[in-house]
Amino acid sequence: MMRVGVLVSGSGSNLQALINAAADPWFPADIVKVVSNVPGAFALDRSVLAGVATEIVDHRGRPRAEFEADLLRALGDVDLVCLAGFMRVLTGTFLGAFPGRVLNIHPGLLPLFPGLHAPRQALAAGVTQAGATLHLVDAGVDTGPILAQGTVAVLQGDTEATLAARILTVEHRLYPMGLRWMAEGRVVIEAGRAIVELKPGESRWVGGGGLAVR
Ligand code: GRF
Image (cartoon, rainbow, N blue to C red; front, side):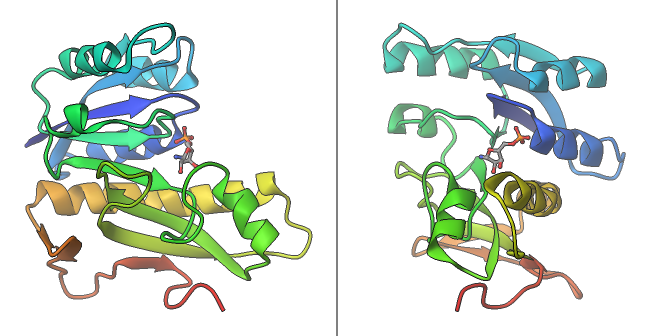
């Protein structure tokens, strides 16, 4: 059973999707620790309700190296780290402790629209489909090997909030799926790309599938 730590900063709906998936006794990973850099984040309440140990590691007013060292201590002996709405960029110091074993979910179809406010960027670009990307984290911002992506339509009259909410539903499907692949040892990185050993009927695309942008 893979031991998973989750880093959060906010609402924690992706954390909830992981907790729900892991409640299935057949799921190959356990969520054993949730660490928030934001005191009072709702993700902490979700963790407590689910009986998962929590800790707050505040980033404010301290050197990044010290913050990251504290995060590592708080995570303890986990095998893999999921970033779930964690709003800090991690450096090589942190990532070196979990080589190829840090996942992130991004509300955009990478490599398009990295960084902050991806749904806003998608609306501004006028694309007809938007979506989410589950990827391994490297030292860049939203640049690591992609595990899976999912699309949603951009609808007439969408606001940043309505589009982001639609994208979240895809995120909640992608994250448990990709975590399962990792825990089952079905992901290898070759030349900077993630190769997933798929089973019959599985796809690395959820939602609309296929090409997402005209
Ligand atoms: C999600 O849109 C995720 O893609 C982004 O931050 C948001 C977090 O939402 N990184 P939640 O905290 O999981 O509800």
